[in-house]
Image (cartoon, rainbow, N blue to C red; front, side, top):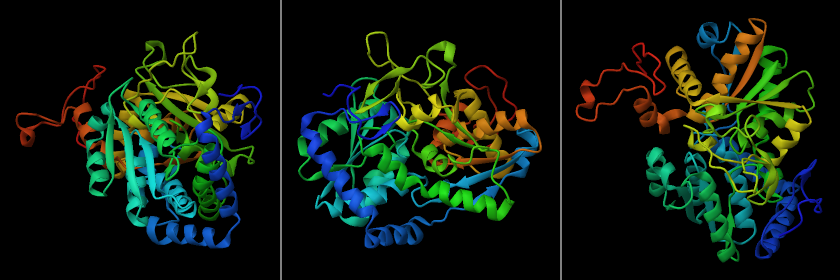
Length: 424
């Protein structure tokens, strides 16, 4: 391992770097060399652009949500960037197609991936099927149970899904297993890391493959609304969808960049995944120096979120830099607030967001109420909620295990708040 203070490679201020076993250094250098050449190669860029157009369905559209905004956001104008409409149902396909093309360019025949909510796993399995690559996806046992639909989707696409049974059995442990696999099989395997963390060059490379989100959104806002938004909001687990949309707006100083973290059961409860509002301090996890939920001895603290995709104790190093520099703000959204946002958007606009994305929707509810009707807010709707229907139905008391047909859509949320006839 390398001294965290001595490596300038891939830094965002003090954060980032490359902290890996020696066995992976050559593979990371090979990856960096190939991706640099690829990003300057018109043939590679042309193939990726064509896949984005004819396979993913880019550009993704903007959707104004006036009923939701009027009833829940203080009358502010709210616009969604519809990454949920991409093929496979989330923003994850942007990065995966790029890394899958790099895998073939490097002459490797197998990809591995970690996944929490299953969105990155489904995207990786999809790209592997498209390009004829073997695929293994690691997923914490807890997440396989709360995202069972996506486990089935990955297996239907031909991927091997390996449940991880140690640690908290969530995303952090899936990443650990993927790194172990990569060390043992690096000669023919590429690790398609799914977010903007990990050792250099992953944070920069994953951000660049997702940067298309912000490039499109900025041009669309100017074209359709005649100005830039007052704020751009996105949920932040590792932070890939947020960096994808934030990056093009960083130089627009009047545009606030707001990341919404998994506040779980509340910061004071200790059961949350909020790095910037909780007890996180700078440290090393999964190859990057960044903010980590850890104790005084440097041991990782277990995170918690109703959202599998946000249930992660660390965050991408560029987010740590933007936060310390004051360029981006980060707020916690509790499980209850996220699920209320899930219900509100579903019932007013007919759009079921992924529970991850519902944290960003909840952020728009907060910020719209603070800023009022003159505000224009852009929300990155990073994924769709089909995969979360079972979790949401349980949350709102819509399931009757004995007689699901007669189950009444009325109940109480787990925090005891009165239901009001929930009909999703």
